[in-house]
Image (cartoon, rainbow, N blue to C red):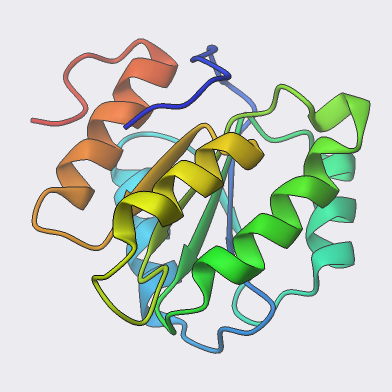
Length: 151
């Protein structure tokens, strides 16, 4: 699902990161390999990335896309705080930023979580589900103009 910022071409690489409270790495490696398979260079900051470090790396690298992932169930809480920090910087105001994974600890409130994250400034939200990977691949393909990314 896409959000309010729309899609823009990217050629500057993709920054993948975990959130400050999430120590999992398998999801980040999976995303890195998937995005590289789609033909994009990836910088993977790893797990437990402090907000200030992520903002600093985004300012320094000017990525074409930022992909945040969480599997600990606290993605919404961390994501809301982080997107506000990113969007405060004029240079990052239009950088595509997406979040996905296990964003809450229960199914209850799923639609509200997605609504909050989009309203706060995320361009797309890919919460755990059977079609999250396919939707993410479609998003990356649309972002880069590659309509064959999902195949």
